[in-house]
Image (cartoon, rainbow, N blue to C red; front, side, top):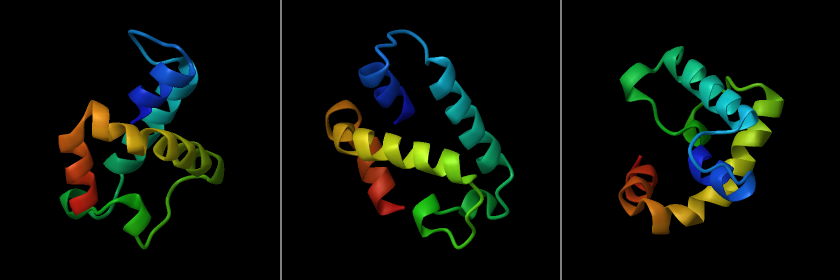
Length: 84
């Protein structure tokens, strides 16, 4: 989702801009420290909110923009996201 957002909003073609790369790295870091491990649901359904407020807002913005576009760019990922 971050790649879609960055490509469309920051006009990055081959790699993420610095801001989006930082957000992606932060998300990976949070996931790697998640106490639920492989049993993790989506963050919206999680009882523990581990994102800092500013990063949470950035992720919400990315998801709001990119979510509907997954239907075009990656419909399989959209289905997987909706099921879990």
